[in-house]
Image (cartoon, rainbow over all chains, first blue to last red; front, side, top):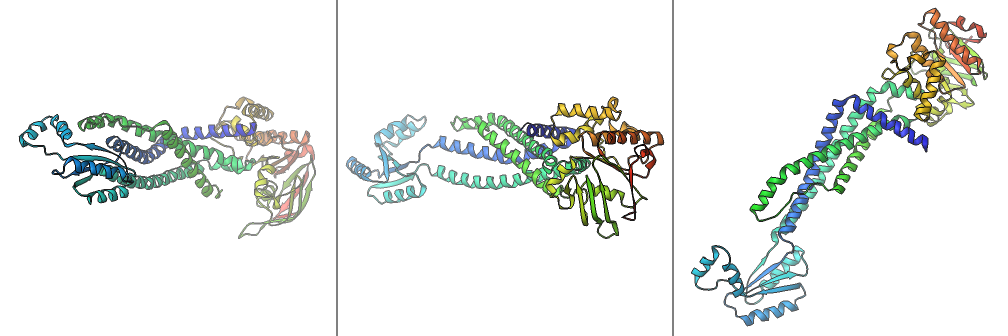
Length: 299
Length: 216
């Protein structure tokens, strides 16, 4: 156990020394890895922010049912009974036309227009929360309600949220693809860096073998080297993404206020950051392992 | 300690480097291998250190059959050997002390203990004062002594050397040879490929002579 610890510490020290020995090369590799990882991380952040925004803008999907303007209150209450009995509807609120008129009149500018009309242009309406918020179920429900007597118009209020959600799903698939591609790029970067390392350390590898070093002993510092490179690249990516969000936070906030949305751009949380670093380290290690399998054979 | 039984070595596309070689080296013996350049001395040493495998016959080192050794077992065989190479194979990017520490680090010794033993080995070859020097700053004789320190730091029971006195002036060569004689005196088996026999005469060594890959 003690020997094991000693050897790992020695390998880690050696890997750090090799990173320091060629600072410019190391820095450029780290930067390349950082940028490669910052792209999918930034994309992930963009998507999760959009999703948050969508949830904020329209929390639950609803249907609005407008009665025809000539229908009386009795028709409305009959309709209310039918809605109550319907299994596909979890709750509903009746919005009498007088109330709507009063609310609309409070709106700046709109009051004068309504007064000029001389009569109440608003119909009685129901705000309906369906039992299922699945888009197909909502469409089916809307189609059914449209067929009822005296129903003038059905509007699916949060259709755009659904559409955005579908778009976000597409975005997520694209992002997964991008992440896989750039992860492959990271493996390629470490692969090549380790190949150069093996060439540089050729004498050391040969002498160590002659002095009784096991394969594990020879590989260990290279594994650490790859993992450290990945970790440093992950940190660089985290830094890039964090700085970018920080820089964009102000403008996004301003834009949100124009649309009466109080929206703060979120950056990577601690758990997400840990995942990023973990993945980067693992990919660096993987690249190193593949490279060693290729290049140590030749000695 | 070492036993060759009808051992031969043929490199691909060339004539036999060694053919039908049989001999034995007992524990604690000092044996010299002589012969003209290209007679197969280096190949013989490479077979002992498991750097090459015999094409025929058997090579036994410390009771282990080198030809049948699994690749995973080779490092552990080498840790019991002290190897001094013709071209020394020092690492030029680290100090004299760190060069000597390497075999101990490979064996998994804690750094402090390793440094202590490495200094003792440097002291034995008279290089303690130069422990911080880089190998490039050392003279030819000092480099050779450094490589001996590295070979013995593990306290091997078998010391192998390939032309350790070549390219050295007479006085330095005698110093280097004396170091080997010292190890022989304390019971280490010493096996040296050399044509400078006279430096080792004091110990009355047994001599093997190779000619065109065959033992005379």
